[in-house]
Amino acid sequence: MLVHGIFNHVPGAAPERAAERQVANCRPRLIDNLARLAVEAPETVMAYYADLLRPDLPEHAQGAGDDADFDSLDAPGRAQAAEWLAAAGAVAPADPQNVALQPLRQMLGWLLDERGSRLTRAVRERTIRSLERTIVTSLREVEAYTTWPHRRDLVRERVAGVIRRQAPAVVIAHSLGSYVTYETLHAHPDLEVELLVTLGSPLRVPSLARRLDPALRAGRGAKPAGVGRWVNIADVGDLVAVPPKLGEVFPVDADETCDTGIGFHGLGGYLANGLLAAAVTPYIS
Image (cartoon, rainbow, N blue to C red):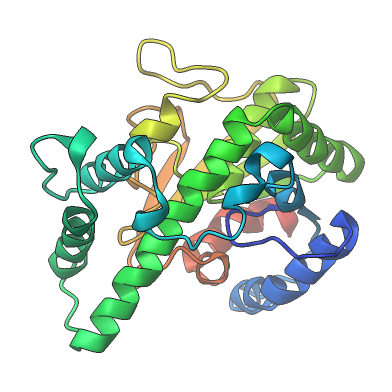
């Protein structure tokens, strides 16, 4: 079973149909990956919740069409973006509360250059824009999930319902989906999952970790009661998984990093990674 992250809204589609479409898009990568180990991919379903995070309430409608860039963030949002980039290793401005847009892009460019990327100027600018959009979209969707009335409960009930109906041995949660799944499994301790795999997880991003429910205690998270084994996998270049290893804060059983070059945070890249195949094979073969 998959739990999606950002960039997964399917306009006009019912949740069940949207989930089917998203699975059809990404499952071939998983099939090919497992085939290398002579393992047949099981039937795959997805818990789809992106429709519940749309700004369709009147008080949020004004921002519905904004482009996802640093320019669209208010001052607190820019401070959160600066904190996020600083956690990834960029040098933060002296006063992050007054951080300007250009320093944010400079921080992002510095991180890209530090990862040893030798890109043409045009490709570098497109890459920075893509990463900027990913960070801003992540901030927006977390804001929607954690602060809009009743959305958190609706999302967690949706995900819990799929887990309860499907009773999967393995749950693979990507991006914001790892955040949602962590909270969902804590909120529903009766749900049992033999293996939880988190991919590109933002659970340690400071501005997101502060909003977790249940909150961290003495700086530490807890494994949900119904989870047997928890494996975390993050690309070292994935700016949503910051820092990439969860083990310093969360009791993961295995904390793996991979390097596919410039990490763009896509689910497909993770589903094609050998670390994922090795983690799930004992539970599906």
